[in-house]
Length: 539
Image 1 (spheres, helix red, strand yellow):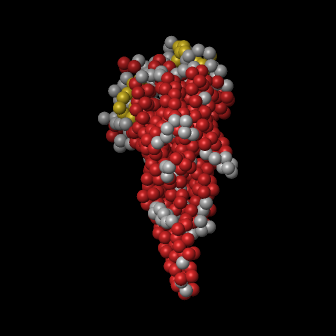
Image 2 (cartoon, one colour):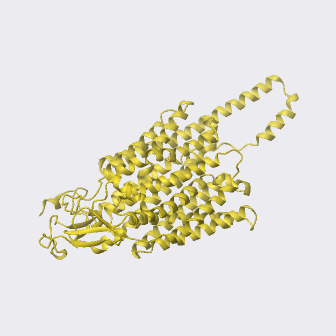
Image 3 (cartoon, rainbow, N blue to C red):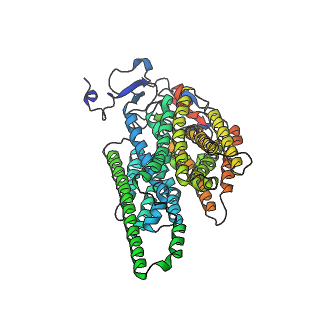
């Protein structure tokens, strides 16, 4: 028996292979024999460089060993995707730790709404700091280094939050912890298309991207449940009536009795704050322990790529990082999809974070608004997986699926905005329906947009491409949050901003020319001695 076949499952290049074929060279996999990509204005074309080259016929695949030009799909790809998805979900959940328990945190630590807002804002702020660095790292150094460093940042950030729960130290440590967690945002948001390109065959690529993407959403959704479950809420007392009662009956009590009442109140407040801090501490300890466990798993085993590529396009070297950035600047079609993703999803995610403020004038409280957000996130995750699987079965329709999603989402938010200004009758059912449908439709398109961007920009690396996309998303979100912080601006404008930023994307999507540069290569399966000529960046 071949020695490779005797190796453990996670180390063997053969025993966990689902499918083996021999149709391409494998640059980057110790069998490099690739000419540098040339550019033209047409779809990728292939020319034989030499008739004397030793090309292996797909039908002559060796039964054992690594045949030159071999591609292979490994079962361990699901392990890699699962571990990454848990990392992404953890990073997203940590980012949203304080929003669902904001009232308790303010009571326990003396924080204000501005403190809670800044803790959330560290996410996009830190993203802009580390975005380019991690984009380069994912393309040049690979997934392992990028994910291990991200796992360390998340674990360190959650660990800092566990050191003390006494003010003012807890405030500073929490801010630093959230900044560290935010630094890992580029990998948590942008890595799914890279992982799917490196590990998965074309028929599973969009599905894998969707799984990695929606798990980040689910981490955020889970924080809406875990926080309130572990942390006691601030007691809802009618402080105004209580205060009036004591004022009106003040003459009937002696100074001694008044002192006893005040002392009892102070004792109750101290006990309440102690319980709140204990609940928050438990929440932080669980988050810190879980983050440390994910980091340990990444450290022990998380390979950057399989021994052999899953498809021809995975075997072809990408452009170097600087050259890839230069080419992206000239790819007009890529910038159409980048603008669509950036302004629509960046605005929507920040709009969702102030949903309780938007719905409060319409009789929907903070808890109910949180559940609406939770249901919308879960719905978006489920629909994303269904749509992505559909896109894997029926190729070359991603653009039209995205257009349908944006038309549906925009229409839902138009109805919602009209209901908030009483143009049409409003009700809780209407608010639930329009928010959930609108959020689901727009977020379900995200994996498709990631894959479309990779196809349009290929052979620019997936890390570079999606790094730029997610940076634009965070810039859009920051602008939205800055405007929200303007005193007295109100909240009605936010609803029409969501309508406008999603609606303007529809004509942009119609203008986009759908191209599948990467899929062309996988379908053509160029031979070992093929020279591949890619479309011009301007195309």
